[in-house]
Length: 315
Image 1 (cartoon, one colour):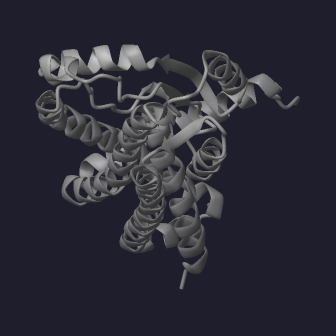
Image 2: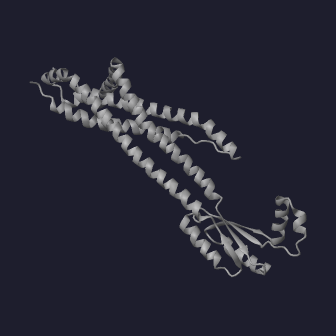
Image 3: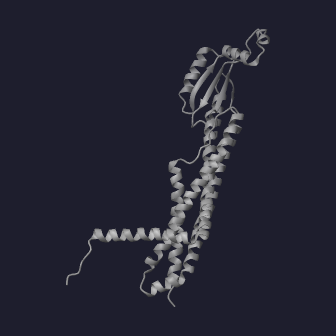
């Protein structure tokens, strides 16, 4: 009698079908214990939403920092006796620097005209015999030039120029802003590490309790010849569902937080006569939140399930 043999493709199809069946069966297992499952998923969602929210905060802080730093300028107040030829030569030289995005020249006459229009007392200025204002070169710094060290070095070089009377740049706010963003970045990394470690512990402990509650069923399965890998599979899929649903919950909580704060941030920006829209998670970042929750949950469930199921032996 010839034995019927399955082809490789048929065996693979049966393998996939078995995994799909157990995948959805494990979802039913979560549904059968709604209270404990919801509590676990809620803890996962909050634990993932907090670092995601901190990341959104950092993302917006970096956006604001980039806008403010893009306005970093060095003002060169030139000597009164500087000639147009000397000014043009210096302007051409500065325009070739990698630390300078562009150079704006304001002549003494243009500066006086602008000051008269802004100050509101042009008649008093007309009484002056000479123009007291110097010519000014405004240096808009490039991205490399906005770094505090680079800006300070450039400022020193400008003060050494022969026709420059004074070069000014508020270094303090630039250094403080860079320090605040760096500190916030470190806080986000630290908080994310702690909270994601909490995700590992929560999933690991939840599955440990599930395994202990199913101890007698596992012993019976081992008595009839079931392998550890076969017994572990449903628990691993439960951990997978915890990660997917927890990641989706974290994404939704972060979205709600951004939506809730966006109106307040817009109102605050209006008070400063500026426009700023709160940035949220884009598509790639949203998928990363869900994927992070899924991978961490799988890692924790793999460790916990493998360890505790191996420890159970029929008595």
